[in-house]
Length: 250
Image (cartoon, rainbow, N blue to C red; front, side):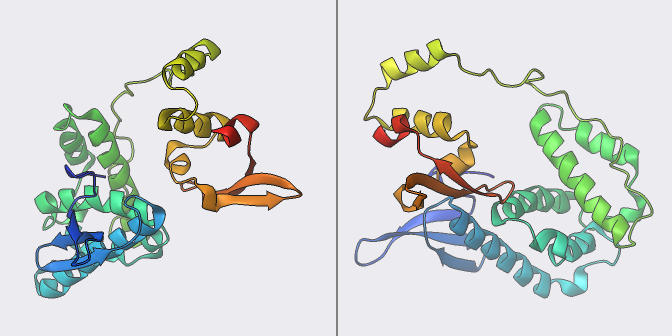
């Protein structure tokens, strides 16, 4: 997801009403809409995805006659309307749209039945200077071309078998030792935001994307014990996490 200088998603900016209240305005071309809630929260990103959908629907209606049957544009339009896409989380939809819209700007009018594995290798190879971006694009192409196969637009998926770039972290990320945790606490003691952030991660074991949304509104009493109620963004799994005494103090 692209961030603007203001820290907001692409096409968004801060506005202020007559009472001095700040709100986020989404604007792309002639399409504008106000978004509510905390930027990057699940509810906010759901609104953001609907705003992007509104832009694409408007563009699709204006240029419906120019969409060539069997083209990548036609595939994307069909995919956006499918349960495969509509069943995704808003944040996942937004990220996937980002890659698809970039790709269709360059290749939208081309017929997908002429797309070969060699073409995919050349497209991914041209992005060698940004390997993570190339890998993400390859992942999205595999997904939408699988959809094209299921939808009868392709006989086989030409993106299957195209190699990814090696990960920059083949051995994974370093796990902090107890000494490193102690060093961090010495620099960021109890009462600081940094300390609270670390304790949320350390005492709940949740992903960063889930931990940043945790607040007092998520605390529940369960069998006489305080717990944090959270629904994981990636897996949609509901959890009740006991609050460690160190986390409660933070």
